[in-house]
Length: 376
Ligand SMILES: Cc1cc2nc3c(=O)[nH]c(=O)nc-3n(C[C@H](O)[C@H](O)[C@H](O)COP(=O)(O)OP(=O)(O)OC[C@H]3O[C@@H](n4cnc5c(N)ncnc54)[C@H](O)[C@@H]3O)c2cc1C
Image 1: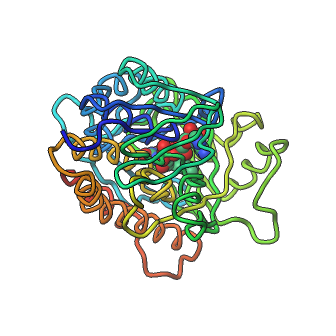
Image 2: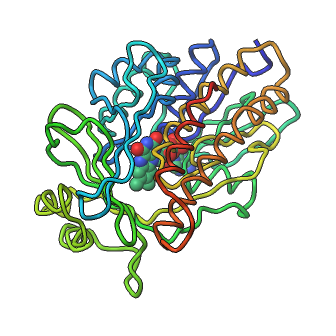
């Protein structure tokens, strides 16, 4: 065992939960804090590509995710008319007994990870943030908003795109920036034969479907923010605006557009990204997940990379090496992989905003997906 025996994980989203489970599986003491007192997640779905399933298998929860989700066998794309085919790619299955990819609701996935964390023996406190931290030679002393004060061998900042830990430790030089695109999502009844990601390439973005369960799928649209309109939109009226934004699509998207009627079911957000240059640590504070490499969603890899971060960190912590070496090894295994995903997704986003660019979005998406399937 390395010099890291006691870890604070800040942020109990996909990355923080995965890191906590993975570290506990290697016998590390873990405190996990989460700012959101309700510790809930919004209710659309998430794609778990093969590499996410492989990492989830390391956490002991892949089979449960598959049981509560729906297999995804590959990705097909069409022009916005819904009938002119572009690409048809099959995803490889990485582990026997598991599908090539899985779609699952975010609430189900969250419950699975929360249950595993609770079972793991990690100490969880919600509605709590870090109020001060002091780095020492071989650790970090932390003060919390609930009055606790504790010392750790390592603090893992897994607090997302707008990370407070990143600001506290790296200064404010690395901030999430708006990509020019916005995302729309809604859960709908599944098209009975839907077993692949189905993507339709429009004039200023892409729309598509992802299966989430026997009776459920989600519709996702990523598009250039319309010029001359505010990027932030009030909840009231979201369904009407989303229907309008789908007007150019034919085929199955047009057939499902009229089901978008309830503002509360529509999840809308501007797409921001960040890629912190290496290393993602200062002293004994390490950033993982979106806090270090928040990607745009075109390749469905943001959450997958956050899970992989946790698995790789725990593997390195479990080795009998000094803490500095743990962190250096972590960076060596993580940076290029995450950079490829962030920049590949960014490339597709640029093409979505400007079709004159010489980029084949499906080819880039497939390349990135294949790169992500390489061994960890
Ligand atoms: C439109 C869209 C579609 C996507 N689709 C996919 C997909 O299909 N597949 C995929 O793999 N990824 C997808 N992603 C990306 C994925 O959601 C993120 O990459 C993933 O959630 C990152 O996990 P994280 O734990 O790093 O951050 P988060 O999920 O943001 O979790 C951070 C946690 O930290 C907490 N927190 C924040 N600040 C503090 C603080 N100061 N103190 C304590 N806690 C704090 C938050 O409340 C939250 O619980 C998508 C993203 C978008 C925007």
